[in-house]
Length: 304
Image (cartoon, rainbow, N blue to C red; front, side):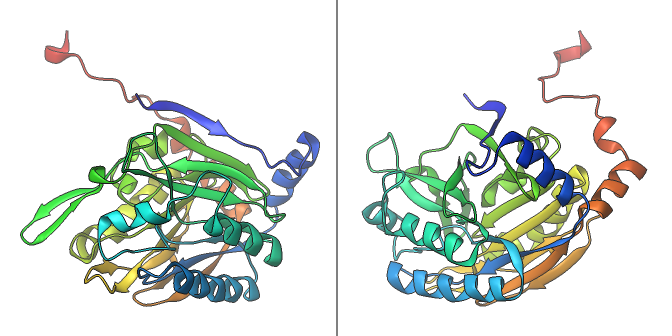
């Protein structure tokens, strides 16, 4: 059963008073965020080297919050390849890489998603980990909705190798409240509404080219608009060694639904400015979030 109660993990480096002060400061000061786009392959070391280069690029452009794409460290030749490199929580070269790069560049780093051990044999958790500027892991979200597509010769069955998560996760940060989601989660608006009053939503992704060319941008913009939230979508984008093609089009969206920056294909970095004061003014002018009446409860048949 999905727990539709948010999980908030506050940074260990902040006292409650400091956290409040940081949040108030964030409401006044604009800052830069970045979405990293890759076309990852089956070689973990090679993918980490590319991610390292792109994280450094983002940091050099002034980004304080950087988001990597889904399964940035491995896109295997077959779906079971990720089982061989899955890690125990808190231990492993991919997690060490994320921690070290967050600390090195003094950024908050959303580690796309990586394979962590699952409770079910021969499956992994598709886990999004968040690290603060000291390299400490401050949040973990396990992808809830598992992608399934049967469209001609294109077939995906994530449930064959991935164990679904069951918890909605929001993390307090110096930049406001950050809601975590992964790829296929994008199609389920009730997930984002259950986050409640998030300032920024991040979505590591590996959207297929087939679905992405029609659905990706409308869905990303819709989630930003309906939650009056900034939205950072970091995607896999290009042709992969395994023959798969991902849609790319990593982007940052503002709470009004405007695309602030976008990268169509290939490796690169999307950087944009988040302005909490502008967001606050929009929420004051259009207080749609306070007007919500219906909740995600099943309807009564026949209106009885």
